[in-house]
Image 1 (cartoon, rainbow, N blue to C red):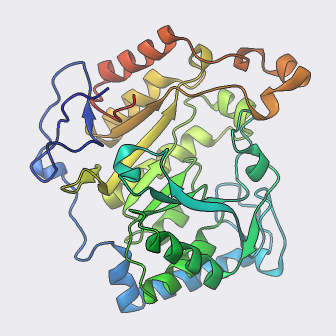
Image 2: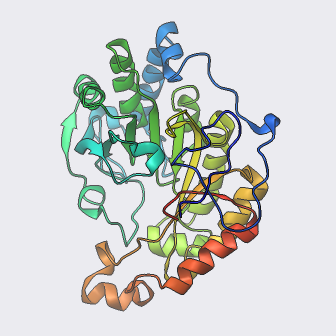
Length: 347
């Protein structure tokens, strides 16, 4: 969709990243619901200047000794190299890092989003499109200095932001690296691009650090989450995480070029047979977060990961196809009927 965006006066009326829905007229965003902007931007610069960012990084690093960084709460000693569900010990793995032009327009802009694909994951989605790096952790083991250098190289390449992809299990390592990068010239906003399966306590380390939160909301049903991601508590944990993310950064805002500056962007993958629960998720976002929530309804589901092959066909017959056009139209309709109107232009 390329409809005229519905934005407030702090946003660019021609911002490519903010497309309005085709349903009911979008209400104006009340001033009281506009999130306050940090005194410095990106937000972490203020914490870096005061020394708080290093203190947060040290606190997070210490927590790896009895790891409860994500909702799995494995309590292994990752400082000593032990690994839990995510498969990652003391050092983060980086599978790839490059200017990504496949993200939302408001992130990729014209120079790309500086994506860092992190190995390992705290979910086991059976249809994962990155299963080769997430289910069996892949990538180079990098210490804090090396990971900081990756961020600085992406900045030097002209990227508009630093996009941490699947970061939930390596927040301490990322904070250590960010503290070093900020002290040596990093000035790009951080995009926290997660599955939504995040710990609220861990997200609180990121308060004043992350400017743009981009969580998935994959499943409304605990049973679907159990069967398809091995995490029956996923819906509950994700609702709590999105509440905390929105508390920190508010609704998504754009700069004069249409780039995301600060706020919450929710991704939702439409699944065959409505396995994801699109109507319930959309209604909850409107009621409990904000009717101004910016959402990317994604239509690119395709069979991947454990869904493939004879065993996958037997265990997950309903996931053996892409969604239909009718399913896609219905997902958009129910989201609009719930009251959402700020859709990514590709939705």
